[in-house]
Length: 232
Image (cartoon, rainbow, N blue to C red; front, side, top):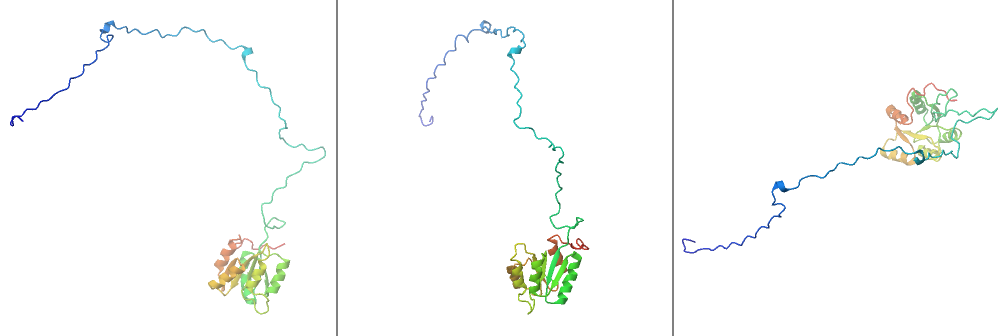
């Protein structure tokens, strides 16, 4: 700007005047009254104990409307009833308290197959009955309750019902036995046919002893547990 011969004029606004402090603050410190008021409490009289008349009266004792439970008193000449101990076993028992062995009905038109299956069930302590025709099985089931029924799918020409039909007949009862199909027909279609008939287990021939043990273990039947027991 100076080189060009030009000048710049700056106009500053007028500063406002500061307000004057109060006259009290302008006095010297020695003129200020800095004494504090007396904050001590006056002496109070000691507390007096309350009079008996001013105390609340204790609540009156409430007598229960019903007598409190206590030991029953027996009438003269009458002995109190004695609670019988609850039985801990849900199944049938001997007079000595030992549980009865499980029962099984074996149905097969082959005598060799019946003897073989009976031999395999002997270590489990099952009490077994053997029949070779479906009519005999129905007659046995009408007079005795069995825990298990092991039956073959093919029962021969002398049986009016095959294994599937006999299984359906057994499962019509409300408290039917556990039906186990033991057959040489081991395809998936045969398993489906057995399941539709209502069988609870499916074992193939030749018999797999491990599968038999696993199935019986589901119902608490294990080797040497019931062995040696005799049904009443």
